[in-house]
Image (cartoon, rainbow, N blue to C red; front, side, top):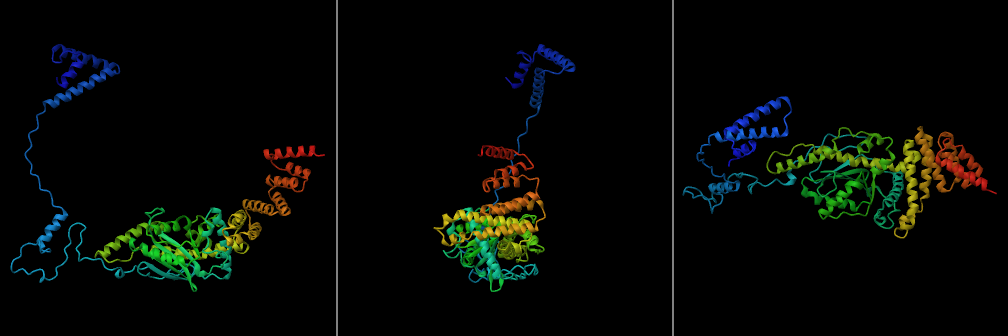
Length: 558
């Protein structure tokens, strides 16, 4: 039974749909359904009936449609030959291969007597054996932008062919004062590294290196330009800028990978430079540059020496200059801290795309295409050169401020940051001294002189109070100075600072509570302690508890 007949039988209640009664019944039901639909909303059963009727009409119209005529046979085109087949056919036609070449006429000269013919470019990516890439030394070097003067920093107009480029920059050579300040910064840096849990034996090259003065030619400034921001194995450091002092100038040597295959050679040169360095300076190198270089060295099996100290200027700039800078970028530090503008500069985020285009141009030039002309890669190299060069004056700026805050710090916020840095490092040094004394004698001797750190912290706080005009900064400086005196055992000086805090901030409870503690525990004067607690402007739960406890002690006293 056809599907149409089965549907009709369902609609007619089991009777044959072709009987007249069924037709009249269907017509009457249709009329009643129409009348009902005109007055009320159709029910689900009625919607189902209408749906089935539409299905019947579609089936009947399909059954009445003529059958399609049989299609005429079509000619199938033969498959196109592949590129390899075309290459073989072309080789046989041209007679390049004598064994399989076409038969020659007697007048045709043999391959030995034929003049050398032009190379034939085969389909696809195949290249003839005669088309060899030009040697790397013959590739034209890219021109750099015109010389730029940024507060004494001058750069050459061209750079050498890959992989290395050297530029002599007009950066001042550090004097005895700057090197002494650097030693103070390194003492802070070693304590900071121990605070982070670094291996103390890896801080210096030998046992006595920590106390030995570092000469300018033993300092290395490093910055990289990479293909991404990840430290994974897929990120390539295509440009490594290394700055070091030679005689009286800072020389920046740039290791550019004209091809990723040059990476082992560039890392080998970097290993030579690191072997002569005792101090490596970077900007965010602890979190990115140095771990990435270590990963690339491991993948290329080029060991890098590790016996050097590392100063990451980002951590110090973030701590010292956060209150006066808009962000923590190196370019911002140059402008807002050092006071010079590097001028027109490319955005470092564009470096990966520029390097990708540079590699494509290299491949095209080696394949016999257009010669390699000027490209934005020169601007990327200039950007990297300025990054490396600006680390040197920034290092002296940070070192001098840390070593002599009264002379070189410029505002109260910076002085407060320097004081807290000295104070925290001195406390960490005292706690770390028993742990490292047996393993690192030079570090232990450094840790024993942590009293100078506390003195510098107090000097920074007092100088900050002389310069500060903001209430929040003055409040933080007074609290830090009072607590520093208390930890050092000078209770009288701590009391004087809290008295000063009480006079400047009479609405704060902190000074009254601290004075109550001082009178109760050190001067043993319960009545003075109770008077200070009751004088607090706000009766917080802490103050109420202290007042009640002091009254109980006074009542129970003999």
